[in-house]
Length: 498
Image (cartoon, rainbow, N blue to C red):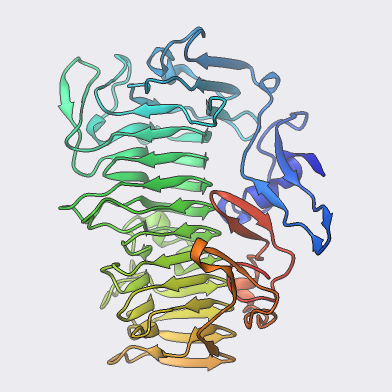
């Protein structure tokens, strides 16, 4: 049975308190009819059916002061025709799908309001294909005179100190074509090439920015969130085929913000030979949950920041990763999955503190060793709880941690051939309740259905989380792709229940 639930009622699940800071707040007027579709369980012959919850935010145009439609048979043929710098809070811009991509660069600089946001949304066609905004041969509107136009296709935020875009929703768009081999026409009519570190979507200065249902590809960096930003939510998006073979500082996604939540995203393979990583982070208050990481590049690399507001934020000293799926293919060149900090780093900006890694499912098909975590320094701590790690290769060995950090392990399922530390590590280990085996009991491993069977040895083995991790309850599980299902129990190990 399907119900329509008011968005306000779901604010605690759609908008993490970690992202918004404090209690969940309404994001639209109290009398709005914006809705999120959810499913309640039907009862089948074997019990409740899994409850999938689409990650789609629906808005009622009647709740907005201004509604602008862009596309064929509408008042505005192209996003270039919209006066973006004049938009106010309480405006909805709907960009309708057409066969030809919109070859237009745009910047969103509106300082909107909590109850009157600026919403820029794509309207897919009947087959569900997203509208495409392409940087290839794109045109810059004459009134768009921001600096560094070679660094982005779409930008949120301005250049000046007061150029902060606030309470902005960007959703259901494909943004492509930010690569140095592509060119565009700037606001003066001059043809330029993109820079080597350009991004499909750049958040230069954003506050309470919500990114939903985007596809970011064919660019050097897919998503770039810069250090003047705060309270950023990235949800249910697909980033793939980004990167650079000569520059290691470009990634599928780069985050540097105060309070960043990254959830329900599919982080796909980068281009062949790319030197970057899937997600690079320099944030305070980082939460990475319910994502799918695949491809040959390192999934997550968390490094220090030089931004004072980030370094002085209490959340800079911890990061929480849970409910994620990590897939390491046979040919993955990097042997580490998650890196926390930089070896030998010290001083006020060093990313010290604690990494909480819980209820994740890791599959490594590498023939050589896999290092689950890189925690290089003695003033760092990794808390590893209720995870499932599967490594089917006969010659494979799993090391839980490399580096000199402190490792606390509790209630994990690991391959028979595992070690807590790599050779030469000087770190300390507190290990309890580890279960080993070679078959975790996945429903359909060949098709990457990593739910647990009813007789899985990983059922019922999870324990209580540490107090600091428990403030992020594990309520959902990732569904392929960019969807979620409610999780009925947290008694099972890994990111899926049985």
